[in-house]
Image 1: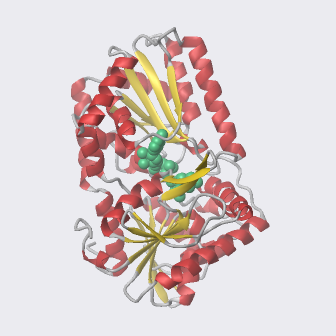
Image 2 (image 1 turned 90 degrees about the vertical axis):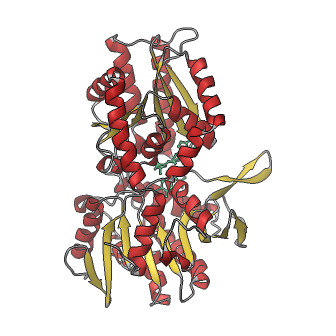
Image 3 (image 1 turned 180 degrees about the horizontal axis):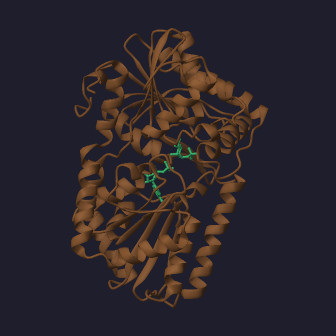
Length: 470
Ligand code: ADP
Ligand code: G6P
């Protein structure tokens, strides 16, 4: 039991998320388990590993067994999906309808009735898997946009259950959300929860506005009455396991990797770093063009600066993702063709998953970290960078459109659509005195320290179970 998380957590916890913490991967005819990608798993895995509980989710592959198993102190309950269901539920409705709609329609959301029907069916399958795990003292915590119907489906069968829902991505403005053909059904699905958590106050309010407009839920402030129950919609900005990142950053192994990396890049060259899932919401292409702009201005050359872009493969096979990969690779190639020298690459591009130690070594080696999504619910990478800067050095350049910007106001904030503006801010960041760097980073570290992953979970579960300290 994790004693960093207070009382209400003595109840048994059932986490329901599309992704399990591990996914089944086939290589050379052999299947093995590896850590699942993305911020949801980064946050929920340490939490559940520490305090124990059940996790209901998909194994990330086609088919597989529904037989429960234990992993890292958790009881895992897989929900198998067929190839067709993956295409319609995960790739289709979740990632081609909801994902773009909820991220400011950065790509045109596609609305297909077939996808919607499968979304309903799969939400029902998740609900059926959860039901036998719900006892009188259980707390069910449903996560993210794939499973917005699960709260009401559970409520129907377990009227007295404690059900929470947390959305890791933005909840869009009413003007955008209104496009959704099944807007009432989704809102009613969410209203099955007792508590709805969002990454920011604005997102919690967006939900409240939509619910008041399209359902018969009524109420003032953060409260709604619906179906004879009271429901609250509140902000709970998610965070990271700061201890884990600080411990890693201080470790000898990471120190050795940092020295190696620095020696390979050249000790006199500054490193500008980007780390993202390869997603069109992350603004990787625009960020690269901002770096290109810096080199074209001529104050900096590959003799004194380079960029490292680490991109985790994500949702490969989906047209928008494959296109973004092509665009990123083309842009990297163009910049290196134009500005690289033998032995002095302008942009180092890594398209792969990295072990945590290596990731933290990159965070520690980077003079400037560019986190410039066009829209992001939170962005944990920004917080991970701050947590890894134990000596208060380094500069965080952060998009105004990342949820993290609400808290990390001492970062250098940029408009990620503005190439010239970003180039100017990054140029300035390369000139920032050690004193100014340290003063900003100190404030950022204080913010991240004040409210970590365990505080986030305690606040959410406390509010859900009635042990609310606010
Ligand atoms: P999202 O949830 O959209 O993926 P976040 O920034 O919130 O975005 O979370 C991404 C998570 O993925 C972070 O915890 C980060 O450490 C991890 N990550 C990003 N790039 C890599 C990589 N190349 N290898 C391993 N983990 C990565
Ligand atoms: C974001 C979403 C998660 C998702 C992750 C990785 O963090 O909020 O729900 O799991 O991206 O995406 P994937 O499609 O690989 O699960």
